[in-house]
Structures are given as structure tokens and as C-alpha cells.
Amino acid sequence: MNSAPPSQPDDGDELLCHCLQVTRCTARAAIAAGVRTLADLQRQTGACTGCHTCYVECQALLSEGLREGPREGGQGGGAATTARS
Image 1 (cartoon, one colour):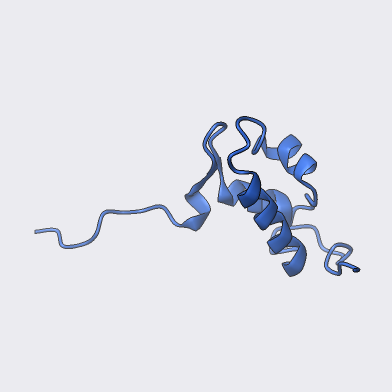
Image 2 (cartoon, rainbow, N blue to C red; image 1 turned 90 degrees about the vertical axis):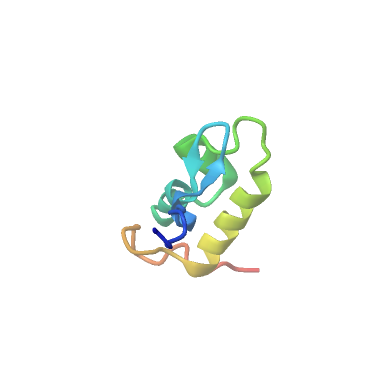
């Protein structure tokens, strides 16, 4: 009589990179800690170093992180909070 839906991981626990089992949470934490480029994200987390299927999603997370600036737990200082066009 359990009417609750099956437990599903939240967005942070969702796999971003299936090849290396990197979650969105791991990628966001790296971005919050100062990762700003795909190459840095690859070095820090291993994401997007296998088949590259997650390339678009990795780029989107990086863009999102650059727009939002540092998050809680990230390095402060605001150096990366303003992008110049």
C-alpha cells in the first residue's frame, strides 16, 4: 500500500557524464570552486573526457555558473562574477 512514487535522485545526483560516472552535483561543486573552462572541468572531474556526449551539458553548466558567479562553498572574491563582452 505504498502510494509514494519511487525515489528518484534530485538534479544534483543525476549523472552528467555516464562514461566516468560524474554527477551534476560534482560538476557544479567544481564550478562553484572556481572552474571556468571545459578543460578545467575535465581535469577536475573527468567529465567529458570519454565519448563527449555530455559536452553540451557541461558547457551549459559552465555558462550557468559564470552567469551566477560563486555559490556557497565556493571561493569568494567575486573575480569571476562579471563577464565582459
